[in-house]
Amino acid sequence: MSYAIIKTGGKQFRAEPGKTLRVPTMLGDAGATIEFNEVLFGSDGTTAKVGVPMLKGAKVTGEIVKHGLGEKIVVFKFRRRKNYAKKQGHRQGFTEIRINDIKLG
Image (cartoon, rainbow, N blue to C red; front, side, top):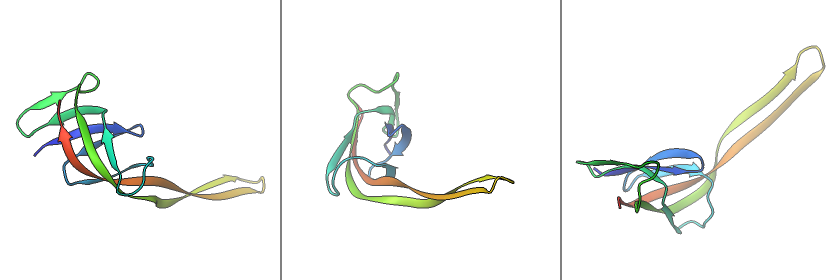
């Protein structure tokens, strides 16, 4: 089973063919093809390749499935005895991507 560790949005993800990933929001419409060139590590099931810091010629291609918003978190700021309380919510955006192919240069 082949897989690769890719870097996008300041985070690292394990990508396998057929798997869907939720990555930070990226540009593109649903159905568009996207390519990741920042591959840190790759394995084809028998051998492993480690990049220093990236694998040369390696790329992972995928398809944008949808864009959306994650679960809501509550940000509550409070100062005791100062009559100050502030409640705020936040939902982080994401892009769901289906991995199609992994090429380890």
